[in-house]
Length: 346
Image (tube, rainbow, N blue to C red; front, side, top):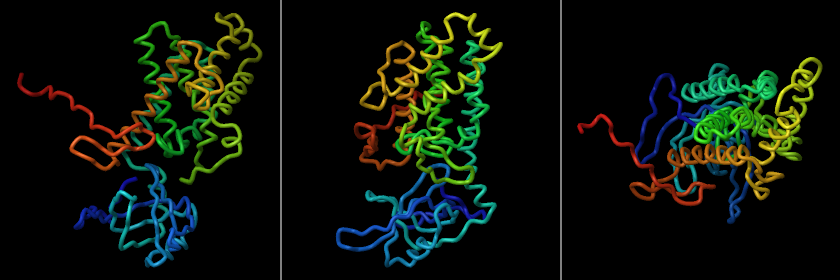
Protein backbone atom coordinates (compact mmCIF):
# COMPACT_ATOMS: atom_id res chain seq x y z
CA UNK A 1 0.00 0.00 0.00
CA UNK A 2 1.55 3.26 -1.13
CA UNK A 3 0.99 6.94 -0.50
CA UNK A 4 -0.15 8.87 -3.55
CA UNK A 5 0.59 12.54 -4.12
CA UNK A 6 -2.28 14.95 -4.66
CA UNK A 7 -2.15 17.37 -7.61
CA UNK A 8 1.56 16.63 -8.00
CA UNK A 9 2.38 17.51 -4.38
CA UNK A 10 4.81 15.25 -2.55
CA UNK A 11 4.04 13.60 0.76
CA UNK A 12 5.11 15.85 3.63
CA UNK A 13 6.87 14.43 6.68
CA UNK A 14 5.59 16.05 9.86
CA UNK A 15 7.04 16.18 13.35
CA UNK A 16 7.11 13.11 15.56
CA UNK A 17 7.63 10.66 12.71
CA UNK A 18 4.17 11.29 11.29
CA UNK A 19 3.63 11.32 7.56
CA UNK A 20 0.96 13.33 5.82
CA UNK A 21 -0.27 11.56 2.75
CA UNK A 22 -3.25 10.27 0.84
CA UNK A 23 -4.19 6.68 0.09
CA UNK A 24 -6.40 5.76 -2.87
CA UNK A 25 -8.22 2.67 -1.58
CA UNK A 26 -11.42 0.68 -1.50
CA UNK A 27 -13.35 0.02 1.70
CA UNK A 28 -13.39 -3.79 1.82
CA UNK A 29 -14.74 -4.39 5.34
CA UNK A 30 -16.35 -2.49 8.23
CA UNK A 31 -16.85 -4.03 11.67
CA UNK A 32 -18.50 -2.36 14.64
CA UNK A 33 -16.51 -3.28 17.74
CA UNK A 34 -16.25 -2.40 21.43
CA UNK A 35 -13.20 -2.21 23.69
CA UNK A 36 -13.01 -4.04 27.03
CA UNK A 37 -14.06 -0.78 28.65
CA UNK A 38 -17.17 -0.56 26.48
CA UNK A 39 -15.81 2.13 24.18
CA UNK A 40 -17.30 1.68 20.65
CA UNK A 41 -15.20 1.97 17.53
CA UNK A 42 -15.30 1.04 13.86
CA UNK A 43 -12.64 -1.26 12.43
CA UNK A 44 -12.20 -0.45 8.76
CA UNK A 45 -10.21 -2.52 6.28
CA UNK A 46 -8.84 -0.52 3.36
CA UNK A 47 -7.20 -2.13 0.32
CA UNK A 48 -5.39 -1.28 -2.86
CA UNK A 49 -3.53 -3.55 -5.26
CA UNK A 50 -0.40 -3.60 -3.07
CA UNK A 51 -2.11 -4.78 0.10
CA UNK A 52 -4.52 -3.89 2.86
CA UNK A 53 -4.56 -1.80 6.01
CA UNK A 54 -6.76 -2.02 9.10
CA UNK A 55 -7.72 1.22 10.85
CA UNK A 56 -9.68 1.97 14.01
CA UNK A 57 -12.09 4.90 13.88
CA UNK A 58 -13.14 5.85 17.39
CA UNK A 59 -16.70 7.05 17.90
CA UNK A 60 -15.43 10.40 19.23
CA UNK A 61 -13.31 11.10 16.14
CA UNK A 62 -14.71 13.64 13.66
CA UNK A 63 -14.10 11.23 10.77
CA UNK A 64 -16.01 8.34 12.39
CA UNK A 65 -19.22 9.28 10.56
CA UNK A 66 -17.38 9.54 7.24
CA UNK A 67 -16.12 5.98 7.54
CA UNK A 68 -19.57 4.79 8.65
CA UNK A 69 -21.17 6.28 5.56
CA UNK A 70 -18.57 4.84 3.15
CA UNK A 71 -19.99 1.84 1.31
CA UNK A 72 -18.25 -1.50 0.96
CA UNK A 73 -16.24 -1.60 -2.30
CA UNK A 74 -16.43 2.19 -2.58
CA UNK A 75 -13.27 3.88 -3.75
CA UNK A 76 -12.15 6.69 -1.43
CA UNK A 77 -9.19 8.98 -0.95
CA UNK A 78 -8.06 9.03 2.68
CA UNK A 79 -5.86 12.02 3.47
CA UNK A 80 -4.43 11.92 6.99
CA UNK A 81 -1.48 12.14 9.32
CA UNK A 82 -0.22 8.55 9.49
CA UNK A 83 1.87 7.02 12.25
CA UNK A 84 2.90 3.38 12.53
CA UNK A 85 2.84 2.16 16.14
CA UNK A 86 3.38 -1.21 17.86
CA UNK A 87 -0.43 -1.43 18.00
CA UNK A 88 -0.96 -0.79 14.30
CA UNK A 89 -1.43 2.23 12.08
CA UNK A 90 -2.84 5.31 13.80
CA UNK A 91 -4.26 8.30 11.95
CA UNK A 92 -5.09 11.89 12.72
CA UNK A 93 -6.69 14.84 10.95
CA UNK A 94 -8.48 12.52 8.51
CA UNK A 95 -10.27 13.80 5.41
CA UNK A 96 -12.23 11.43 3.19
CA UNK A 97 -13.66 11.96 -0.28
CA UNK A 98 -14.90 9.67 -3.09
CA UNK A 99 -12.43 8.84 -5.84
CA UNK A 100 -13.01 10.19 -9.31
CA UNK A 101 -13.48 7.56 -12.06
CA UNK A 102 -9.93 8.26 -13.25
CA UNK A 103 -8.50 7.83 -9.75
CA UNK A 104 -10.44 4.60 -9.21
CA UNK A 105 -9.15 3.18 -12.48
CA UNK A 106 -5.61 4.07 -11.45
CA UNK A 107 -6.10 2.40 -8.08
CA UNK A 108 -7.36 -0.83 -9.69
CA UNK A 109 -4.44 -1.17 -12.09
CA UNK A 110 -1.95 -0.54 -9.28
CA UNK A 111 1.37 1.19 -9.00
CA UNK A 112 3.73 1.24 -11.97
CA UNK A 113 6.22 -0.89 -10.06
CA UNK A 114 3.62 -3.57 -9.23
CA UNK A 115 2.19 -3.58 -12.77
CA UNK A 116 5.65 -3.95 -14.25
CA UNK A 117 6.60 -6.77 -11.88
CA UNK A 118 3.40 -8.71 -12.50
CA UNK A 119 3.63 -8.21 -16.26
CA UNK A 120 7.20 -9.56 -16.23
CA UNK A 121 6.11 -12.53 -14.13
CA UNK A 122 3.22 -13.29 -16.49
CA UNK A 123 5.52 -13.16 -19.50
CA UNK A 124 8.03 -15.42 -17.74
CA UNK A 125 5.26 -17.85 -16.81
CA UNK A 126 4.06 -18.00 -20.42
CA UNK A 127 7.63 -18.42 -21.70
CA UNK A 128 8.24 -21.41 -19.44
CA UNK A 129 4.95 -22.98 -20.51
CA UNK A 130 6.12 -22.71 -24.14
CA UNK A 131 9.22 -24.72 -23.17
CA UNK A 132 7.23 -27.72 -21.92
CA UNK A 133 8.09 -30.53 -24.34
CA UNK A 134 5.53 -33.19 -23.44
CA UNK A 135 2.59 -32.35 -25.75
CA UNK A 136 0.04 -33.48 -23.17
CA UNK A 137 1.39 -31.25 -20.40
CA UNK A 138 2.04 -28.42 -22.86
CA UNK A 139 -1.49 -28.40 -24.28
CA UNK A 140 -3.03 -28.77 -20.84
CA UNK A 141 -1.02 -25.81 -19.53
CA UNK A 142 -1.85 -23.62 -22.51
CA UNK A 143 -5.55 -24.41 -22.18
CA UNK A 144 -5.49 -23.33 -18.53
CA UNK A 145 -3.97 -19.96 -19.46
CA UNK A 146 -6.25 -19.52 -22.48
CA UNK A 147 -9.44 -20.30 -20.60
CA UNK A 148 -8.74 -18.77 -17.19
CA UNK A 149 -5.91 -16.31 -17.86
CA UNK A 150 -7.85 -13.16 -16.93
CA UNK A 151 -9.06 -14.61 -13.62
CA UNK A 152 -5.60 -16.06 -12.98
CA UNK A 153 -4.04 -12.60 -13.30
CA UNK A 154 -6.49 -11.12 -10.78
CA UNK A 155 -6.25 -13.82 -8.09
CA UNK A 156 -4.15 -13.73 -4.94
CA UNK A 157 -1.82 -16.51 -3.80
CA UNK A 158 -3.20 -16.34 -0.24
CA UNK A 159 -5.46 -14.35 2.06
CA UNK A 160 -2.52 -13.51 4.28
CA UNK A 161 1.19 -14.14 4.81
CA UNK A 162 2.46 -14.11 1.21
CA UNK A 163 1.43 -12.62 -2.15
CA UNK A 164 -1.92 -11.73 -0.58
CA UNK A 165 -2.88 -9.15 -3.18
CA UNK A 166 -4.61 -8.82 -6.52
CA UNK A 167 -2.27 -10.48 -9.04
CA UNK A 168 -0.26 -12.20 -6.33
CA UNK A 169 -1.00 -15.66 -7.76
CA UNK A 170 0.91 -14.76 -10.95
CA UNK A 171 3.88 -13.54 -8.91
CA UNK A 172 3.97 -16.68 -6.78
CA UNK A 173 3.39 -19.10 -9.65
CA UNK A 174 6.12 -17.50 -11.75
CA UNK A 175 8.47 -17.65 -8.74
CA UNK A 176 7.76 -21.35 -8.19
CA UNK A 177 8.23 -22.08 -11.91
CA UNK A 178 11.57 -20.26 -11.95
CA UNK A 179 12.68 -22.18 -8.85
CA UNK A 180 11.49 -25.47 -10.34
CA UNK A 181 13.45 -24.72 -13.50
CA UNK A 182 16.58 -23.99 -11.48
CA UNK A 183 16.16 -27.21 -9.50
CA UNK A 184 16.01 -29.15 -12.75
CA UNK A 185 19.41 -27.74 -13.66
CA UNK A 186 20.81 -28.71 -10.26
CA UNK A 187 19.16 -32.16 -10.35
CA UNK A 188 19.02 -33.32 -14.01
CA UNK A 189 17.15 -36.50 -13.02
CA UNK A 190 14.02 -34.40 -12.45
CA UNK A 191 11.40 -34.43 -15.22
CA UNK A 192 11.48 -30.77 -16.27
CA UNK A 193 8.22 -30.90 -18.23
CA UNK A 194 6.40 -32.34 -15.23
CA UNK A 195 8.04 -29.87 -12.83
CA UNK A 196 7.03 -26.84 -14.90
CA UNK A 197 3.46 -28.06 -15.38
CA UNK A 198 3.21 -28.97 -11.68
CA UNK A 199 4.44 -25.51 -10.69
CA UNK A 200 1.86 -23.90 -12.98
CA UNK A 201 -1.04 -26.01 -11.70
CA UNK A 202 -0.05 -26.37 -8.03
CA UNK A 203 -2.13 -23.39 -6.87
CA UNK A 204 -4.50 -23.05 -9.83
CA UNK A 205 -7.43 -23.75 -7.49
CA UNK A 206 -6.79 -20.37 -5.93
CA UNK A 207 -8.24 -18.80 -9.07
CA UNK A 208 -11.56 -19.70 -7.40
CA UNK A 209 -10.51 -19.75 -3.75
CA UNK A 210 -8.74 -16.36 -3.77
CA UNK A 211 -10.22 -14.66 -6.81
CA UNK A 212 -10.98 -10.95 -7.16
CA UNK A 213 -13.86 -9.44 -9.15
CA UNK A 214 -12.92 -7.55 -12.29
CA UNK A 215 -13.49 -4.12 -10.73
CA UNK A 216 -13.05 -4.83 -7.03
CA UNK A 217 -10.43 -5.31 -4.33
CA UNK A 218 -12.57 -7.38 -1.97
CA UNK A 219 -11.68 -11.06 -2.07
CA UNK A 220 -15.01 -12.86 -1.61
CA UNK A 221 -15.42 -16.22 0.05
CA UNK A 222 -16.74 -18.81 -2.38
CA UNK A 223 -18.58 -22.05 -1.67
CA UNK A 224 -16.01 -23.99 -3.68
CA UNK A 225 -13.07 -22.37 -1.92
CA UNK A 226 -14.49 -23.00 1.55
CA UNK A 227 -15.97 -26.47 1.00
CA UNK A 228 -13.20 -27.92 -1.15
CA UNK A 229 -10.04 -25.78 -0.90
CA UNK A 230 -7.58 -25.03 -3.67
CA UNK A 231 -5.92 -28.46 -3.78
CA UNK A 232 -9.20 -30.27 -4.42
CA UNK A 233 -10.27 -27.62 -6.92
CA UNK A 234 -6.92 -27.90 -8.71
CA UNK A 235 -7.30 -31.66 -9.05
CA UNK A 236 -10.78 -31.18 -10.52
CA UNK A 237 -9.53 -28.52 -12.96
CA UNK A 238 -6.79 -30.82 -14.26
CA UNK A 239 -9.19 -33.71 -14.75
CA UNK A 240 -11.78 -31.54 -16.52
CA UNK A 241 -9.28 -29.98 -18.91
CA UNK A 242 -7.62 -33.34 -19.52
CA UNK A 243 -10.96 -34.93 -20.40
CA UNK A 244 -11.75 -32.12 -22.84
CA UNK A 245 -8.38 -32.45 -24.57
CA UNK A 246 -8.02 -36.22 -24.63
CA UNK A 247 -10.49 -36.93 -27.45
CA UNK A 248 -10.50 -37.82 -31.13
CA UNK A 249 -7.28 -37.60 -33.13
CA UNK A 250 -5.48 -36.04 -30.18
CA UNK A 251 -6.31 -39.05 -28.00
CA UNK A 252 -5.01 -41.40 -30.70
CA UNK A 253 -1.77 -39.44 -30.89
CA UNK A 254 -1.38 -39.33 -27.12
CA UNK A 255 -1.87 -43.11 -26.85
CA UNK A 256 1.26 -43.62 -28.96
CA UNK A 257 3.45 -41.70 -26.50
CA UNK A 258 5.61 -43.10 -23.72
CA UNK A 259 5.14 -42.81 -20.77
CA UNK A 260 1.43 -43.42 -21.04
CA UNK A 261 -1.04 -40.55 -20.79
CA UNK A 262 -2.56 -42.06 -17.69
CA UNK A 263 0.82 -42.06 -15.94
CA UNK A 264 1.42 -38.44 -16.94
CA UNK A 265 -1.99 -37.41 -15.61
CA UNK A 266 -1.52 -39.26 -12.31
CA UNK A 267 1.95 -37.80 -11.71
CA UNK A 268 0.68 -34.27 -12.37
CA UNK A 269 -2.23 -34.84 -10.00
CA UNK A 270 0.20 -36.14 -7.38
CA UNK A 271 2.22 -32.92 -7.56
CA UNK A 272 -0.88 -30.82 -6.90
CA UNK A 273 -2.15 -33.16 -4.19
CA UNK A 274 1.17 -33.31 -2.30
CA UNK A 275 2.63 -29.83 -2.74
CA UNK A 276 1.95 -28.77 0.86
CA UNK A 277 4.35 -31.50 1.92
CA UNK A 278 2.33 -33.19 4.66
CA UNK A 279 -1.22 -34.03 5.63
CA UNK A 280 -0.80 -31.72 8.62
CA UNK A 281 -0.64 -28.77 6.22
CA UNK A 282 -3.59 -29.84 4.09
CA UNK A 283 -2.19 -32.21 1.48
CA UNK A 284 -4.28 -35.36 1.09
CA UNK A 285 -1.12 -37.33 0.32
CA UNK A 286 2.58 -36.84 1.13
CA UNK A 287 5.21 -36.42 -1.63
CA UNK A 288 6.24 -39.75 -3.13
CA UNK A 289 8.27 -38.81 -6.22
CA UNK A 290 11.41 -36.70 -6.76
CA UNK A 291 9.35 -34.04 -8.53
CA UNK A 292 6.83 -33.92 -5.68
CA UNK A 293 9.55 -33.35 -3.07
CA UNK A 294 11.20 -30.72 -5.26
CA UNK A 295 7.93 -28.87 -5.93
CA UNK A 296 7.04 -28.81 -2.24
CA UNK A 297 10.32 -27.08 -1.43
CA UNK A 298 10.07 -24.71 -4.41
CA UNK A 299 6.60 -23.64 -3.27
CA UNK A 300 7.68 -23.16 0.34
CA UNK A 301 10.85 -21.29 -0.62
CA UNK A 302 9.05 -18.77 -2.82
CA UNK A 303 6.47 -18.14 -0.10
CA UNK A 304 9.19 -17.66 2.54
CA UNK A 305 11.15 -15.23 0.35
CA UNK A 306 8.00 -13.11 -0.06
CA UNK A 307 7.35 -13.22 3.71
CA UNK A 308 10.90 -12.01 4.35
CA UNK A 309 10.52 -9.22 1.79
CA UNK A 310 7.39 -8.07 3.58
CA UNK A 311 9.12 -8.26 6.96
CA UNK A 312 12.01 -6.09 5.77
CA UNK A 313 9.54 -3.52 4.47
CA UNK A 314 7.14 -3.35 7.43
CA UNK A 315 8.54 -4.92 10.61
CA UNK A 316 9.83 -2.46 13.26
CA UNK A 317 13.58 -2.50 13.92
CA UNK A 318 14.62 -3.98 17.28
CA UNK A 319 18.29 -3.12 16.75
CA UNK A 320 20.58 -2.10 13.91
CA UNK A 321 20.21 -5.44 12.13
CA UNK A 322 17.24 -7.18 13.78
CA UNK A 323 13.56 -6.68 12.99
CA UNK A 324 10.52 -7.77 14.91
CA UNK A 325 9.05 -11.16 14.06
CA UNK A 326 6.36 -11.21 11.38
CA UNK A 327 4.05 -14.22 11.45
CA UNK A 328 4.26 -16.97 10.33
CA UNK A 329 8.05 -16.68 10.29
CA UNK A 330 9.55 -18.63 13.21
CA UNK A 331 11.44 -15.76 14.88
CA UNK A 332 12.77 -12.24 14.63
CA UNK A 333 14.24 -11.37 11.23
CA UNK A 334 17.89 -10.48 10.73
CA UNK A 335 18.91 -8.15 7.92
CA UNK A 336 20.64 -10.03 5.08
CA UNK A 337 24.40 -9.79 4.59
CA UNK A 338 25.15 -7.22 1.86
CA UNK A 339 27.05 -8.34 -1.20
CA UNK A 340 30.67 -7.28 -1.51
CA UNK A 341 30.96 -4.11 -3.56
CA UNK A 342 32.46 -5.48 -6.74
CA UNK A 343 33.40 -1.99 -7.94
CA UNK A 344 35.79 -1.33 -5.04
CA UNK A 345 39.52 -1.34 -5.64
CA UNK A 346 41.06 -4.74 -5.14
